[in-house]
Each structure stands twice: as structure tokens, then as C-alpha cells.
Image 1: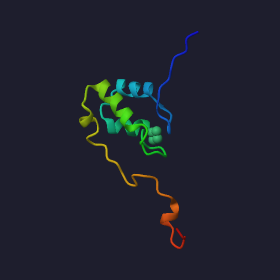
Image 2: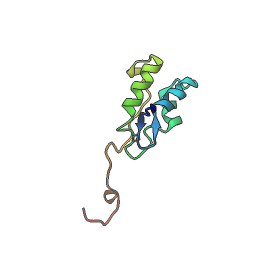
Image 3: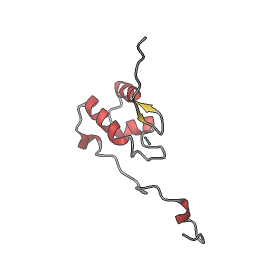
Image 4: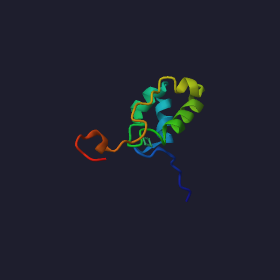
Length: 93
Ligand code: FES
């Protein structure tokens, strides 16, 4: 028996390549909309693992260039995880 393979693109939110393809098929034609619809990049890693992979899949499926796909994508601070202790007064660092 042959099993189908599943490619997980966003490990934080369990988003698969198939779900991305299905969303594009349904008419999602903007990468930012795709991100919000599937919550790509909304996990603890903030998209460090999945955004470029998802953007590449979206680019290939829609024929849009990577520049066009990522034109509305903004990286929001903090760029790297910051321990909560740095935001609390009175705690020795
Ligand atoms: S892998 Fe997608 S947000 Fe972490």
C-alpha cells in the first residue's frame, strides 16, 4: 500500500503544502492574504522557518516573482526572541 506524503510547510501551525495549494485554487491571489488565512508566520518562530518556503510555493503556483510576492510582507520586531526578563524592572540581568 502506497501512502501519500504530506509536506508540512509551517511546523508551528501545522500548515501543509496541500493547504496552500487549495487556498490558491480557491482564489487567494495575494501572499499577505494567504498568510493571514492560514496563519503562516503567526507561530512562535514568527515565520523564520516557513515564510520563504511558503512564498516560493506561492510564487511558483501563481507565476508571480518573489519580489512581487513579498512586496507587502513586513518583518515586525523583535527580530529575534527576547527573554521577558529584559522587559521587567528590578530584575538583575
Ligand atoms: S514555522 Fe511557521 S510560524 Fe513557525
